[in-house]
Amino acid sequence: MTMAVMKRFSRTPEKGAETLVWLAETDDSNLESGRYYADKQVRKPSTQASDREAAHKLWEVSTAQICASEA
Image (cartoon, rainbow, N blue to C red; front, side, top):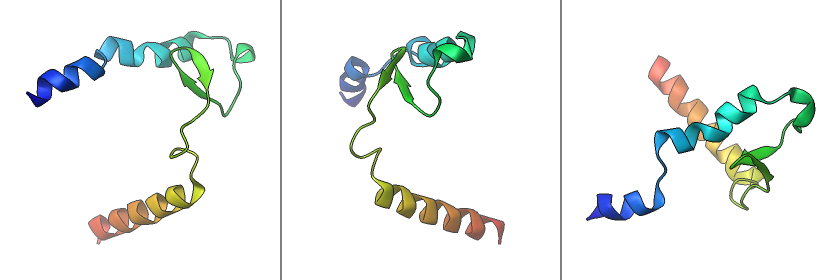
């Protein structure tokens, strides 16, 4: 049942890669550096993606995990 629900909202690998391929093939002068692209368009990132405090916490947790795995 879960897979049936997920299929309704997920993309094929080809569709998921479409914007990345488009970006790789597009002339840099036609792109805005540092912007978020989805479906071959500039999009505004979600509120969660723009949360600097959450990003900082994620960085700290990730760094701690890397350090722990190297020990």
